[in-house]
Image 1 (tube, rainbow, N blue to C red):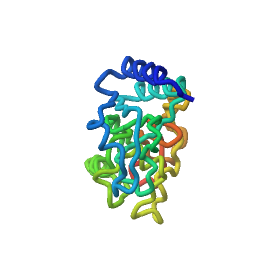
Image 2: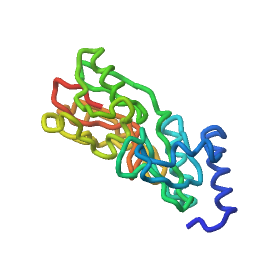
Image 3: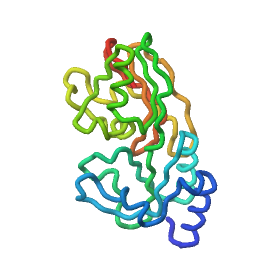
Length: 220
């Protein structure tokens, strides 16, 4: 466990070196918006808020936090009602926000696949699918704010869950692992699975991930 302030400073120095000063927030005003849930029922403290720009930086952050035994709390659109994306009150946890992972990497209407990063919102995915005459079937009230990473990590069902299933149906790629290595598992291993996505989860940090929906749908 991290018990020494010197170790905390050393961890922050390593994180700033790898991610850049602007991607490691410690100022009270800067971190405050990340420290409570949507309903403001839960409020915590954090050693730092990390804002990586790509999967490589996510992996670097995971590796450093594992080295210094720092607990990590992933956060996407922060639309959940259970406090799962809110750090505890110890001030030891590091919050990692995936909101800067915003790229739509590829759209393949013939293969019924779409590859996107964790910070893309559901509404944006739906619009991209509609632009190529396909359907991204996952839908929910928070779709303008909730992000793909959080949707996958919580296995969200949404308004059409009985017809199309939950977010993680067919999902099996988790590029940034707990040990900080990037596993490139994004592949069309199962042609019955039509959606590919990039997100973040409570145990891993996703950057590309296949999910399955019926053939008429684009999957992420």
